[in-house]
Length: 225
Length: 277
Image 1 (cartoon, helix red, strand yellow):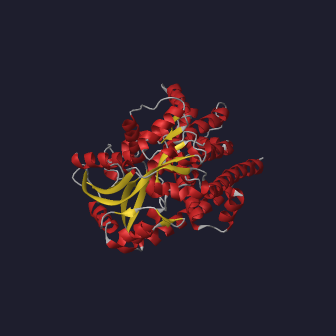
Image 2 (image 1 turned 30 degrees about the vertical axis):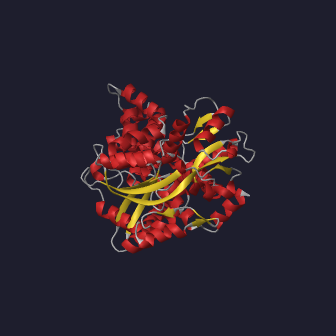
Image 3 (image 1 turned 135 degrees about the vertical axis):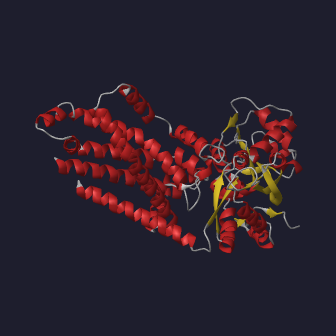
């Protein structure tokens, strides 16, 4: 019964359902793209270079992967609140606050998975490339080429973590209608109001999104082979 | 691989384009301005703000961002300067918010009343009394499940006041502190077939989804007044004080008050305007 009404909401292209889904997707994609850049840099550095404190960074990255979203939300909240050090920018309860939180959330996952992916191949490859006379950038390019599926998979894992999180979006975005309301915060709100249809419709969309992401990944691996 | 990246890129640009199109459609309303309102879950869950605020936005071009939390949290957000105006219901906390200099220009907005909800069978037999504190005492004697908001909200503050009036400190497994909004607590109470204290507005808006009935009402202590307060612009930079005062003047105007008056759920009036007697 609830599912039928939920499907009706989706297929009638309910304006609010579409808006919320687009908000969620834009925020998650933006944060993933923002965190991918430094994560690529850190993951690569960790895998091809040896330096003091390297194991410490890896341990920190791995523990951050399991950090509850509400803790990250709380820390950023205290920084960007008007009474916090970054308060002057007025970021709290705007989409930018969610983007900051989700970037922090996805960064350790992407960096850590890229590091694992690259260290699997980079033990012999750099040496081989060096003996072949490859330059620094040529070397990096070859490493990425060898492991592009694993890198893509790392980025999509980061995306998966942020598209389904509720803590950061709720605490930093404030669940403001037509502004910072995302799929997960709407599900939490509507469930609390006993309105299961809209919650279920968005749940179905969320499952569809994660299915699509994984299907894309699978197709990518398949084509590569 | 390239196809996948292209696909993601297309989706992304589509999302950004539609998001900014939505933004543009809001910007068209005179000059873009945002006002942050912290309010209680009861005003949001009933849908009152969905009729009151669009009228304000149409008139002034100010888009209101509603952050629906309990009264305690709303006041904290005001103290931190994270919102520009608050709409809450716990007079003692409102008065100290103003007295400590965080809020200015408090106005009475509207009222309704609190009700004690419970199962039709009424195992504690509270229907026999008209005294709200006595009703809670009977629930505690019977050890029937009582679900408390437990979140320092206006309703929670009133509930604690009632326990104090009954001379009881509620403890034990029958007393459950949910730490959630009014809607969620009513849903929980319905599942457990226990008792809870609710504002009448939220109860009426959820009436057709639950089996709970009103078992306690009418005691003067259950009066539930809402106030609207501007955050003092002297406490923090960048407070949208002008917007806050325009909102306060709108919701207390004849137009705003009549929107509150005609707002109904299932044919019943949820809030009674107070600004104009």
